[in-house]
Length: 255
Image (cartoon, rainbow, N blue to C red; front, side, top):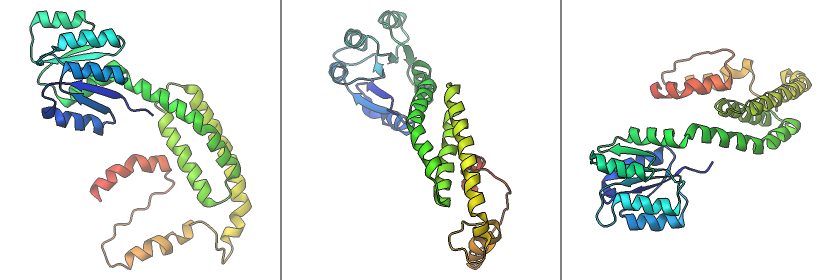
């Protein structure tokens, strides 16, 4: 999906580098500038989703910059950031239709919370997720009808599991139902694939069979034991891929 695009205007923008990096790590595209005049020029040239604007700047003040930005793009939410708690400045900012008013020092988490509240980011992400799944629908349907190897079925299962996790956040129950129908189609097709190949796989000397339970020790475990390094062996039966993905991150932290 397209990144949320932020413009941050502050005459001391250099000292806010850690904030910019924090926002970029969270997936936001952030442009910066040092003055009101630069901000006005950038707003004319580029579409932003939100603007963070310092109130006290040399030259064009934050309040005047706000008014000119609103004259160009009235729908852009602008968050005023200032050291001042003077009531007349707050009134002027509110009168110019700011989206929020933050008092310095501001924590990065406050910025993130403001973004989520003003832009309804979760809702935006959910809508985009639904849109992308609609585009993926045909591709997944083709995979279900054409999968003929264990590797292809494994990739299809990974795709379906991915979309299970993505669509759970979507308010579009219709898309979740579409995914469930695709899962049912995939289960039926996979059952035919297994029934058509299982006897061949269990026959002696089958070269193209996937890794099956009787071969797990010899193929995966014994080679690790032969390295003469400590090995902690855990067997978890009947774990689904989505369950593994839920705990894998925590396990990697201690391994």
